[in-house]
Amino acid sequence: MVTNVVQLTESKKHIQHLNRAFDDQRNAFRNNPMPTLEQRKDHLKTLKSVLLKNQDRFITAINKDFSSRSEDETLLAEIMPAIQGINYALKNLSKWMKPSKRHVSLVFQPATNKVYYQPLGVVGVIVPWNYPLFLAVGPLTGALAAGNRVMIKMSEYTPETSKLFKEIIEDIFPENLVSVTTGDADVAIEFSKKPWGHLLFTGSTAVGRHVMRAAAENLTPVTLELGGKSPAIISPDVPMNDAAERIAFGKAFNVGQTCVAPDYVLCPSDRVEQFVESFKSRFATMYPTLKENNDYSSIIDERQRDRLKHYIDDAINKGATVIEVNPANEDFKQGTRKLPIHLVLNANDSMLVMQEEIFGPILPIVSYNQIDEAIEFINDRPHPLALYYFGYDKNAQQHILDHTHSGGVCINDTLMHVAQDDMPFGGVGTSGMGHYHGEEGFRTFSSAKGVFAKQRINSGKAIHPPHGSVLHKAIYSLFIR
Image 1 (spheres, rainbow, N blue to C red):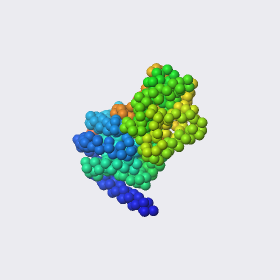
Image 2: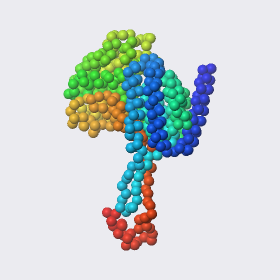
Image 3: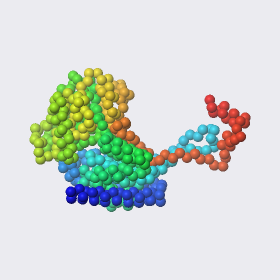
Image 4: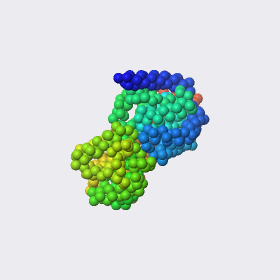
């Protein structure tokens, strides 16, 4: 009871802070609704500088939150893409901010058409726990580049990282420019109810529905980065070691706690055994041991680990053959939150592993006979956030691209499309809506305002009343055909 009262008091404090900071940011934006190029660049340079200065502290904080998180994974997936995203924005921001010239039809001449990109105001960002630094800094970069004020809700499941991020942001930015909020789910609910200029949420599809419902009350535009079940298709003729190695990397990275991790494999039925053996071999090369191996990360908490173990038990109880990929045959029953990768053979739709996004080190394998069967299998299900195809025939690659829908695609690789600065990242259907990263991030957090401008000469008089003149008829005959 005492614990509940303390949590309630803490939540109220966070919500009060949220409300105050939101009002302060709205007032500050009203006083400076169009920050200059130099102001925006200064903000981005300041952010970059503090990330570089504190990268070791972030590595330590994230490691504590996960109990064991690979230092190199934090560098590769959090710090490096955050810095590269800022660098890319700094290099291209001047071009992005320039008004875009548009065509003016002869009937409206002399005049100009331009699209101006105006900040939306106060942007809200809800950050998940799996990549707590990058998924805060990425949207923050786009929102600051577009000239907005930004409020960030960090995850309660990464308390060390959230505390550190809040600390450094408060040191470098005034709260009426960037504000960081912590707290539990009650705070997140209140956060999603605010009348933001734009709200970006990264997380599960189920929670995304609640966020969108709350945002709808204020007609708040949203970008939802969700997830779903991202398939990896193995072609009949790709060298199996090539495919297995790259799938193993994508699945083992952050032990599958990645929204674009390969969720299941579609494999030719006569190559399943070959895939299993190649996967085990390639995985063992990268991770000869797991339990004390700092390269192999842990599950974020016991609740998530229990969920994953339940998925494995459910698959076994429903007839699956489950292979634990444990190169050193270590014992993971107690004293660790680590969990080996489990390959699930004979997976079917009755199993939780084929119904829910796995978000962990479990990889179902579904066999097919003809490639169109694999395509139909994907198209019978909600659109995934990512799709992976392994095969070197370019006609076959194009066939997959033309006949499937997904938020993004990697051909002969996994995960890497997310790290491309000059490509949009986002989902489709239940895997999300909207895009950000690079120029798309700038556009997402901007209002595209069309401006039609005339000066002294008013050609529009030619269509003023009274109607029916010879000139009117000539205009109609010229332009209505």
